[in-house]
Length: 456
Image (cartoon, rainbow, N blue to C red; front, side, top):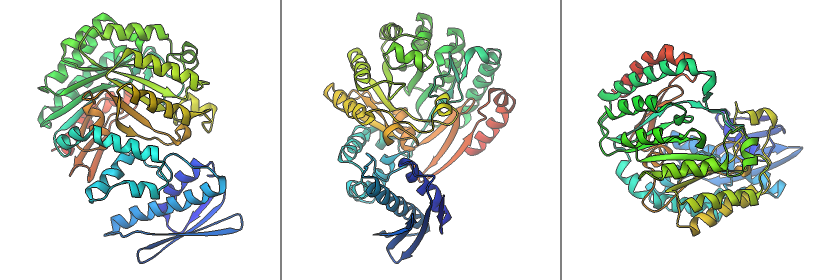
């Protein structure tokens, strides 16, 4: 059990303890400040260690931020020295390490010294630098300007083993789908009075291609009524077994210019193990159908699925690269609350996850792809990350905007979270829609009113 004299540090410290599997051990922590010297005293197992470092906060907000950083670093150093284990992101536990890097650059400093202080590996410092370089044009154009629109279609053929999204197996909620689309369309129409310059539209889920071509067409029609102009328009089409020529045709005619084909792996054995009802051959067929249109296509892969080893992952990586999509996203497997995987294991132990991530960086770089967005999640295998890779000039605007939180995101549908971003990310106000579909259907009009107030 952790005890600390500064309560707002508790959650931050626990994040570090979980990285080392030490969350059930007894620690007594005392934090104090002596001018710019931040002092952390940690007692455990009859031993006492003191860590001190220099921070120079300008105000109370910075003091709290720096106190959290100081406490996390102290516990990381203690546990790393004790275990002899170093983690690729060191003491950084946040979702968006790139935001910390941008903060340093905005202050006129290179971010590398701060990252080194936090024991971040040289390889990860390098990939952050590459991400910032790749997203630079989008970042500069959209920081504080315009908004992105997210449309939630939370339906899937089945629920994957690792998934914690609100997505429901389409067969179980079929009776709600028509009503859901009617409410969603009304929500989309309600955005006309609050949008200014639309940077991008993203239709996600879920597997949007679970819907029929006619149902998709109604959603697309509502989106296009907003006069989105030449904005990027992405549909996360999803699982290969939902693709049909009719759905691709209505998607193309609606002006969509980006779609996702998401196999996660090209191993049929793994697909069965994680609860997917399609094969790798269907992935190739879906990609072939989609490539008949001028879409930028993204392929998603997950490192660490089921019992895959580095050879299995390498084969999937090679298969994706051979198709030459515009984007390839590589996720590290994550243990999420609400997933079937979380019910069966309490901690991920993926053999050679570090090797899989290193291999993806090596092979994708050699194949001409550049990392252009990056984010992390709690409980990821190997304390890793998710990285979007793109061919030069084919980066997804929506991914950059939302991951860096540089402009407002207006989200509609069940489980959607709207964010009004002020000052290029200096302040963010959120509005969440109900996750449960029947509850959403009963309350969507209230959500419309609250959203209008938020974006007034």
